[in-house]
Amino acid sequence: GAVVSQHPSWVICKSGTSVKIECRSLDFQATTMFWYRQFPKQSLMLMATSNEGSKATYEQGVEKDKFLINHASLTLSTLTVTSAHPEDSSFYICSAVGSGGIYEQYFGPGTRLTVT
Amino acid sequence: DAKTTQPPSMDCAEGRAANLPCNHSTISGNEYVYWYRQIHSQGPQYIIHGLKNNETNEMASLIITEDRKSSTLILPHATLRDTAVYYCIVRAIYSGGSNYKLTFGKGTLLTVNP
Image 1 (cartoon, rainbow over the protein chains, first blue to last red):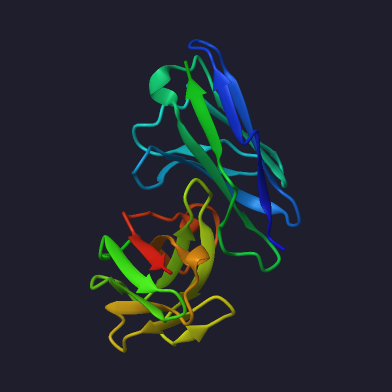
Image 2: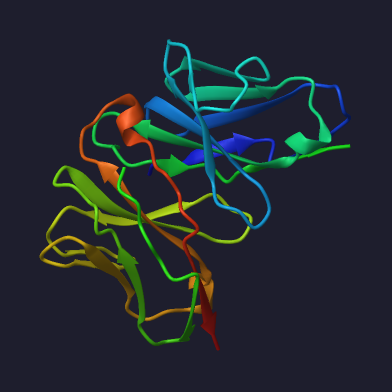
């Protein structure tokens, strides 16, 4: 149980375009989801926290207008990187915390974004 | 959240126990100790957590000192697939929303050698 999926697993896009990444909790309802970013040889950095049905809370230094987060249902959150630039190339990872006993953070497999 | 300190890297022979230390000297009474690991190019995987008692599950054991200022994650019989970065994280026990936030440090790269 407690499986989190992400789609796509990798994506290449051109500079200036937007990319949407989906995060789904497959076998539990996720009341809270988190989005992280990880650059090569670095640790995970939290970008934002999203609760179902409410606006996301962004960490300091993360542009909310650039990284749009939508948590429209208890099993789906999306991260849209708008007007992507090469410096946005990174490994994006989501995690989910559920209800009904699923109180640990379970992580998705990550999405590798490359902006050319 | 309290800060943790871990050695940057460790080696272990396959089949032997891997003991990964973590210092969290500023931990407060309302914080858990969590352990996650991240295999290269994958999302982190939850391993175990504890408050003050020792804990064991199918993956590992967690030993927390009586003063709670340090802990050790034990993989009893390490395999090559256990090669990963192991993160020790302290987190508030309160449930709800941002209280679940995890702050990742640099972790320990455990290399299991054949």
